[in-house]
Length: 281
Image 1 (spheres, one colour):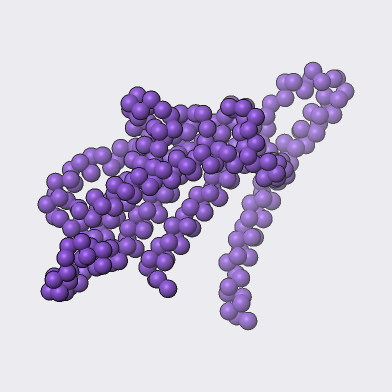
Image 2: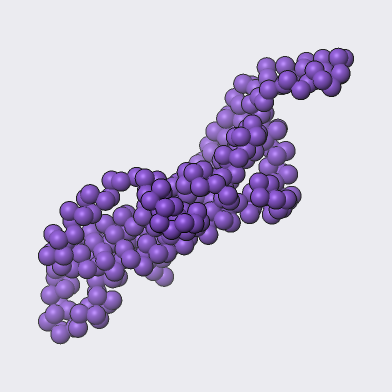
């Protein structure tokens, strides 16, 4: 019985925190809802013209819930360049993130292996890494737009840049931290360099490499929203900015929730892969 209570305690606490948040949100928007009701009654009395000056107000939880249901009912509609469903916008953003992330993995993991296995290579490349790593990924956007001449390709390049450094550094650290005893045994058994890399170093460094990939995917999902606000066109970041221009706070909150949920799913996916690598069945 005690074990059952312990297993349910955290989920119940999460639900209580969520309900407390919704209750506080609802209480904070009650005066706004009351004012909207008064304005609506006044508009009925004096005519439709009186309602044209009404400003956008912060939505209630019920407003956001209704909007979420509307988006879930029709997530992939396409009514023109500036009117696409949240599902389509998320698909564009995910495609850019995964493309940039995979390109970064193709470059970062082999290069990280080389840096981790060769102190000379580490000393040669470390100054360049230290200079380039602190640069904000968005600072590369103007240069990417100027050279690549395409907003989608530029966004993928920015994701590539921001995903590169966590994977590169974690891979190099994981490879360099492999126990010397294991490498010495491999040399004693005359194991070749390639086989040693794949059979000894890679399994030992895999958890650290996966941690770098998990950090990279989180950063990439953060950056794509800001990048799409800059380049426009499509994507969940552009959707948020476009809805701000339309003063649709309800759609903005819906998009923010979608961004958070997709980011959580990406992180959980990499966490699951990390557990498979660390604790294989």
